[in-house]
Length: 502
Image (cartoon, rainbow, N blue to C red; front, top):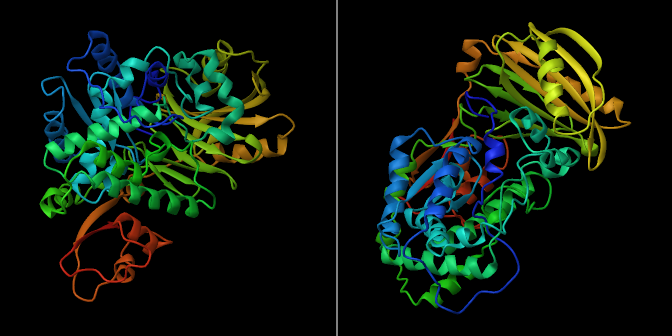
């Protein structure tokens, strides 16, 4: 959840884009990948128009100029080795802890801060960027633009909040799916053959640029360990609908090795082709996980140090933070969406009655506002009401709470299945817990960061893991973060490793 402007029409615009994701049946082609030397004007226009909306949806660019320049340099080195060396290229590091990378028509390539943190050298990062460049030079996105669609529109429920900003009525059908669509993103699939083409092209580019072409295979193997760890920490199996690298890239290390063989490039073991020292110097001190501009999730509590507020999700609800809003998924398909709006001269009751509810009613059939209540929450003027709304899954009760904070309105929307009134009352606890943070409380909220450490004699994964700023599974997190197997005991003295510290 970013700093201002809050929750505008960016989501609606993104729904019109073709974002380069990766999945679907088919088979790899043995033919030489086909590329285009020049882009069409319409392809370039699509990317140019989409780029600012992507920034809004995914939290914008990282503020670290040195990191941005570092990634841009890698991208330009690879682009120069491609079939479009003189075309317009834009390489962006998104300020998101989610692990992902994708591309848009027009030479727009994106990697997240979360993905960079899980790479272990420059060559691994270059392998990911090279793969995305391959999608652009092969015109995969442009060729699929008319027939590809959006697999899922954003994070459920939140779409109804966007009704005020003009979201389509179809988007509102997601309301009944809040329990199952949390975390799903904007993804259009490539065929497996196209994925293999991008593999081969990426291998071609990183080899030409002087990197070890097997680096991407190493990255994917480490990413598999990461997804397994996160699934275990979440207490369940890996969710393929999660917005991360594997949900959009059904890639395997074996497939990349196959691409290396098919491309016929040499892959000597040469430390100079990995760029490990340059990479570690670039990421030392980089924010890990949530940033202050997005707010911090700690268990069931969400706190935003820049906007200076906090609230707690009810027991049994899980918080998902994003650039557009915060969602809380609960039992029985229930959920809560938190966002904000700026409306000059509107009190909380008037906002619900004259702006919020009418905006929803313009997008889907609704009943009459019910149970209007006025009061104060966290010392601020507040109002709440119930609004029945029709969805593809039947009628849902929307529990609307507006809290006035100066010229800003904070909004909690609970999505309650009919007949679950007791659950609805539990959902109201989130809004009731809303409170402003003092300047001192806000200043005390600091992000986690990557720290590069040089291994000393006698240090082991177990001893170094004790320095990780986590409450649980420190050693498992340390091993995955550094690409170590579960049974590797020794570490070479002088080797550099990543720690996550406060």
